[in-house]
Amino acid sequence: GESVGLHLPTLSVQEGDNSIINCAYSNSASDYFIWYKQESGKGPQFIIDIRSNMDKRQGQRVTVLLNKTVKHLSLQIAATQPGDSAVYFCSRPGYALNFGKGTSLLVTP
Amino acid sequence: GAGVSQSPSNKVTEKGKDVELRCDPISGHTALYWYRQSLGQGLEFLIYFQGNSAPDKSGLPSDRFSAERTGGSVSTLTIQRTQQEDSAVYLCASSPRDRGLSADTQYFGPGTRLTVL
Image (tube, rainbow over the protein chains, first blue to last red):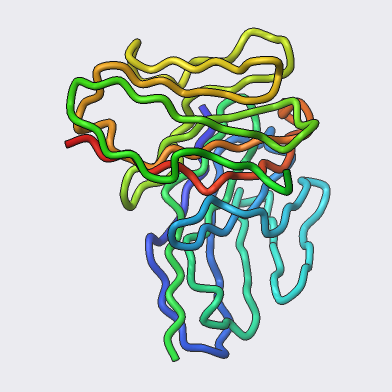
């Protein structure tokens, strides 16, 4: 079945540095991926999405890259700020929504 | 309302008691989802409602868990005879249309933190 998982459970970066959070998937039929951000004590919030006919999509300070050859996607956050500290989930919506455990991003001053 | 709301925000109960958790989705959203998130874990899918279709209950962990959605809007998740392992944050989300393979963004509520003593 489908599995969407995160490579690393935690990531610590210094304020101002760029962050890269990785995610792998197993089902090539995936046509849509969403990144969510979950701050402490809150529900996940939509950050950015990408469809399988795209390799890259940019938002405000965030970029998602999709490599269909190796079934991998990444979320890049530019100039990471303390407010970016959260757990980040990649998700492939579908019949069995699977978020995985997420990557906890900690931004240090 | 402006977003998905859930109540109560916190619930402490004794083992063996029944609890009801409520979710008010965004008005007009036809799809509603319940998830469970244990400490330090990802989101575990529980149940999915879409319009008037029969709900997808494939994620419910046991028959102590049930959910209903009245009038295509408000949903209630009921846990009977609660156990300590039921302690978690229960999250509700809604989306404007069927998820399917074309998927859709889910809008999450703040969750209900359930503690079973």
